[in-house]
Length: 262
Image (cartoon, rainbow, N blue to C red; front, side):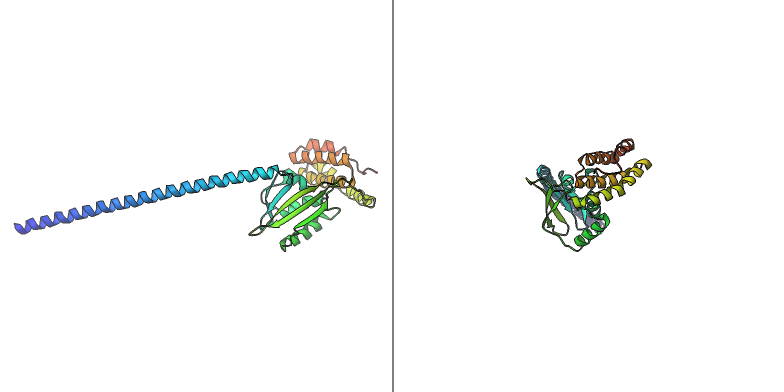
């Protein structure tokens, strides 16, 4: 009788101990979970605050870049365009609508070469030469070059940590009028005559990308040669081609002469 009582008493004691241990274990895990949740909430709050500060600084930087009278572009280690301010297209001679995040630098240089930003050059050869220098890590920190419209732009370039570089394009104000070199007239005429039939064909075939590229190149030739009216008309052709308005492209191209001004 007594041994049975002791057995049941010990059984109850063991069961109570087990239940107590389970309760303690549940409370322990609950407390640990609450601590982890509190730590996670605190970390999220810290990250959210840091993100808000970073976003605010980014907006401030965007505002500063937008207010600059200089053009600014940023290229990453893979030589792709990753950022620019509103003045960059105008200062660099690149169509605004052609720009996109991740655009290869070779495409930017090709648009500049076709627009005459580097003078009378073969665009493909010029792009290949400049890309070879950039891939080799050769960066000229400061230089000046004359643009197709006769103005001068100064480029300041600096390498970025981890690769890539940032370039600042600053228009140079000059009081002397641009000088046109008469010995280049024949070259301008030949370049015009070689490209204008291709532009007419692109307009007739409804090839908007080709029409945009050719009008961009011809606009550079016209600006270099001082054919202001033709340059303005070609600017309208380029815009219409970018918009896909082929009817307007054809109408404007019909106004362009096969023989450039004397």
